[in-house]
Length: 431
Image 1 (cartoon, helix red, strand yellow):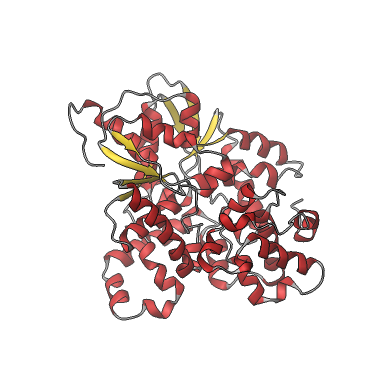
Image 2 (tube, one colour):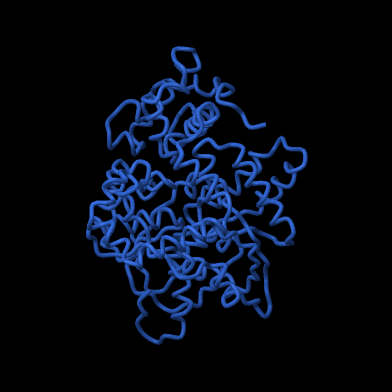
């Protein structure tokens, strides 16, 4: 069974209020508020457990519980090993059980993200909005202002492609003549619907390296549901994905979405007490690999053409702290001829995207993003690489808002371009 909020009392009392989290908490750096900090949030949760107030009935207090990015930076730096991100998620689950989520969030989690097909229909509706003139009207009539935070976040949307990854698969999937490995690719919600060009690049890279790829049907990995305390739906999605992938005999389950990789890997813990799915989840989780992590393990071809550009890298929180994947994407970028890699200050600080955080807390997320954009500007790089589509969307928005020259790009896109440029004798084509 998943532990309830009350069962984490021993973890909460380990917080000794030392303040080490002050130096790494993005929300605290922006607000300066004590309760925007792990120490403050832990104090609130402890007081609730001790009966000073009912966490499920205090909306103003809950604001601090939901303003957490769940980036995990405080957990890494905590000398007492307080798992604040896990505690916050447990508190949210407690609140959700008592009150449910607000209707828009509930609709998104249960009505859209619960089924890939529904999200695809939603994405196609957004494409119509972008291309029919409706977006122009919304922006020039003041309608977006009536939508509050949602209206502000409208600019985050990338250009929605005409076809999803799954609609393109017949043209993209090709079995290598002599496959060295066989993997199952997890097509996450955002990769399938919003960034199919990134997913295509990943599939081409795998196939270039003689890796046979199958793409099972899948639903959302469940990370958004976990973040909003929708435990039952999280478990349901996990079981559905396990049932889909169990039919394929593969050595690894790979994905180019760091958040999905982290979410899939967590199935072992989520279902460890389930007599039917527990063993399957443990076996499945052991196979889950983020794309650069897998390529670094099995080896990838170094015969590439040049991509002449200065590149820096942003570490997604789910990769660097959730999966402990830090060196692998850098290894790939540094292996590309022509790439000058420049390390960015605070590269592992959250960009403020955090799933839907940049929608529900737009103003706060933009202040966090501004810090990231300032660090990117100092690198002088043309490309801001990452390995998470949510980060990709947030970073691209930041470059646009701050009017910075440069492009947010996925690591697999740069590697794919290097392979395509192999035949080029001199110079490199634009990515």
